[in-house]
Length: 198
Length: 227
Image 1 (spheres, rainbow over the protein chains, first blue to last red):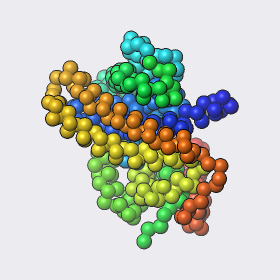
Image 2 (tube, helix red, strand yellow):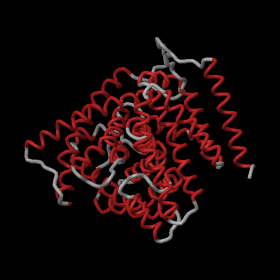
Image 3 (cartoon, rainbow over the protein chains, first blue to last red):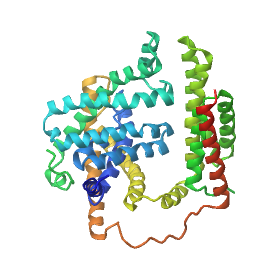
């Protein structure tokens, strides 16, 4: 890590950003309850990470993603810890996208979130295949079973399942963050470390 | 009486079972599972540990066996997947349920990471409960205004915002109050911190770490070089 990266990391994980990162972790974890109440068949467990990427920057979002998975592993399900690299990648992508003013329009957001879904699937598939063998007791298991039934290997089945479901999950998460950012009053938004996000 | 285990010992415990999972020998893996079940029976929250094993780890293990057999894979491959899953997840359950939040805070002090990350960890656990309360209050408030979750996809989508937006805004405003306090106080003080209670490596911890590390290394070497 060179000096400028260290400095950016320090700036993005201190002062106003630090409590915001904790809020991002909290939002990630509470989304499970919200999706259950609103009866939405998606995880949406990276909304907080993407929000921090847009409001605080890439390094803050990476920390938020890592910490979210560790906290989820401690509170809900220890297996979540294995997916920490996926959350770190989501945070890095969201922060990079925000730094390029990506949250300025909805078409940009939709185009990027499809790419993010593919990246997420590529990162999570090897972990899911190695640790779980493709079975997670989730709704997406049916997709894995379908691909295995048509003769694909575990690794390929998990990858195809990820490519089918992750872009949808990430699209909804990114669009939610886009609308949240639009709704936040300027007086609050100006206090974000990356307050140029509009 | 249960003693507080040093986080380094817990880490070596997890590492050892990861090495057993990776070594590839079914006999060793089965022995590892037996050891894990014995460990699960000896921790403070053993009922919770068994509940987690019975409700989550065991069903996935059995499904892995069944699914692989159903798709024509040899029984040994299904067994290998199942054992690997049990060996990777159960040590985490034992370590997490084996300690208490105060043990966890005590353990965090021994990890050489910046104090802002310590704070972040502790504050994020605090804020989860606050957010849950806020979420419940917002949910009841929105119900009083006529909100109800129904099956239509369009309404499901529309339903997220009345719940998510107020929760997010309240959480952000609370976080800004904290950040103001930081700006006045500063959390990265150059002075070394003094705690009433700290955790040091006991002779038992040192011995456990040495045994676990050597065994893990032996298993990895055996897995790489032995047929």
